[in-house]
Image (cartoon, rainbow over all chains, first blue to last red; front, side):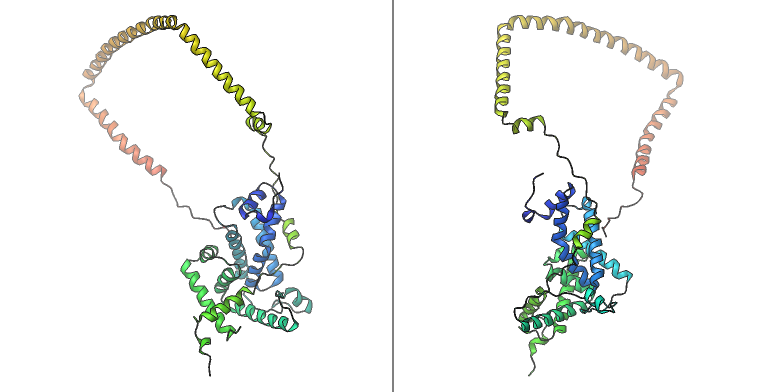
Length: 199
Length: 174
């Protein structure tokens, strides 16, 4: 079998190769979606260790069930749907905690706090910018974390994953109008929480 | 002085700023070794062996296909030309043989068919009369009525038998 250029292969083609038994295709799908899936789950459960476990569970489910994937649907929608369901199942089993960027609510030792805390992307050029970026990033994460779970999912899928309203409706099993309403209300709440939005 | 912009939820400037804020959130990365931990639990299917190429595929791949194609079409053209020439040369004798064959088989067959129809029609008519007279018309009418009723009853029974007992529900993967 010829070695493909993975960068140009579509998700559907990678799935087809994985179904044919190519381990590299499994790894490619994993590489493409590990960060989006982990981010979505982390922002839902707000516990780094738990998010890793749930993301792992999601990928095991997805990669072991590639035969049931129907190529006429987007692979991203399928994997986000499974990730969302996995996280929701977990949240139903456990009462949701309040967001803490300084580690999971159950973390008590400094080591646990460090292991479970969120690592915000660092894009600053100077120490001052770095501090400002961290503060802003922290404020946004806090605000998103305070949203109702259904609003939060819609906002994450729309603004971080860049999915269409239709895809979000399909992933979350919601009517299209409900998705639009949730996003509108979530944005209004975010503006209120973030206070005066300044450049 | 208060900033009225902050109290207006549909301010386009604020929408743009919020979009930028949200876009800055970005993706988070799982811890090191995540990929290997997942792959350790994934059942990778056995590689599917490539199917053996067909005869046609092998010929095409060997680049001998033009030779083969020309040979086959040449042989077909030569044989059909030879057959046509032979038929033209022996046309009269072939026609005579064909006519003799038709006369030898078709005429006796037609005569046999006519003889069978004549015999069967007479004996079938006799049997019908012999059966109807002693049994009486009432029994015949009763039998016909039962046969007529049997058709709709069978259809209704069939429809009841094939009707689904429950509706299937769509399954959503979780």
